[in-house]
Length: 346
Image 1 (cartoon, rainbow, N blue to C red):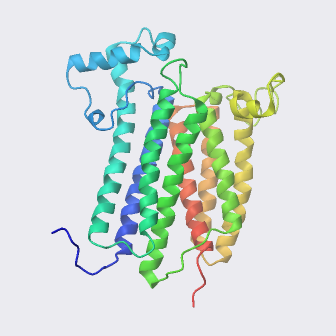
Image 2 (image 1 turned 90 degrees about the vertical axis):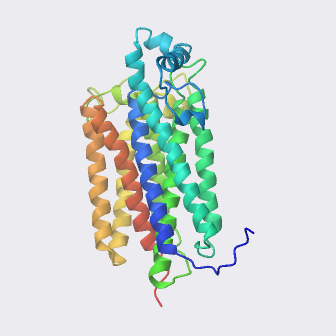
Image 3 (image 1 turned 90 degrees about the horizontal axis):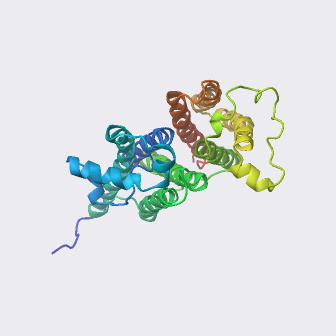
């Protein structure tokens, strides 16, 4: 009785549109995640309840129970022992919004894929990719809880390494969504069955940006942005004396030393910018000057936001704009990379 007898009627444009809607939701959760980190809200919810957690506390007793759970972790005892219930509600709000967005993303994606599968609207060759996106979303939920769990027993904050993995996983999903949508739009426009391929130059630029994203997550997780509120110098010199911890290894300094992390994050940005400049030039020559100009404008704005964030002493509005700008830059870079990787017209 549940057999599907209707012929397949692929709708690549509609599927591409819905994947971009999900990508927009991922962008939103990246921005809210930045607020959550900057307001120290990420550990306010100390249990992982994927279904029941969708409903926030509604009674005084429920709020008190949540607050008691927060009081049991090291962060409360170390930094927030004077916090009131009203103060707890403020940090709870951002973590709740973050988790609610995650649930929304999973629900929207699942419903869209279910409908398109049932109606046989998914174009041939795209079924496995949509399932991959859904699987990555489920994995991201596990990574998110793995990250939160790192700050519930011994640490007073989440592991900055797990924070970086959580951010990069979100960006991976975001990038795959956008690339797949662009492939679907190309299929809808001209029936192009040969999908775009990632070429070496944009791949190198994306890899450099991924490194910068990881450094940004380290900077946030270690509070390294507060180390020096000056630019281009760090205090009175390009690199402060004693900033490199000689007693630890190079990897430990690059990953866990706040001074070194901030220094590398500052200057690696210009390596990324140089590679993006080359991608923009190639995109222009490929007949897409608008994409090239947009890409250059976004990278310039992103560097400006990074400098402004430092000089402001990590103003939360600028810092969140800087994190959101990284997601916008990734989208623009993928857009140009897709144009460069499209098969030639016959």
